[in-house]
Image 1: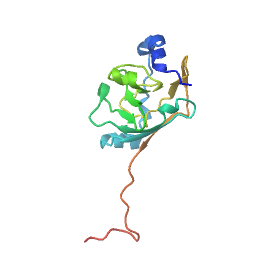
Image 2: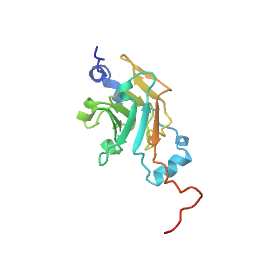
Image 3: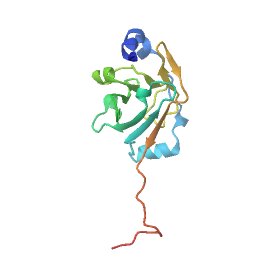
Image 4: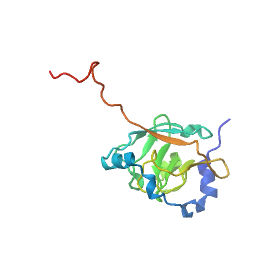
Length: 165
């Protein structure tokens, strides 16, 4: 049995979502490592989303879409699906599908979203809680996580420093 799509429901029943008052992220949410990473321009190329309580089609690895910055922020696409992690025009990280893509992500509809304005903090660092659509309303879900995956540093030969040729 096919699972009903939430995007049509969201469009019909959540028209006021874009006009809702959104709390700003507190300034102290930017940890030192995150600040250094942003300063160095270290944009996460891969994010892993875990959604243990629902929306399994949103879970998985998301790869950075080079050259695409809807609403002025990076865009990640799920490696094995038609799901994107993007910033809304109102500065919230959201996870949505083809309907949002068709609109160029110039919308505030999503299956999962972060409840605070990100203020330029990447999805893996934002301190706000994530919420998921349950078919009738958004539910706060502290078990939703977004984690950056960085390549490990080059390994050195056993025994210490690499030898010069």
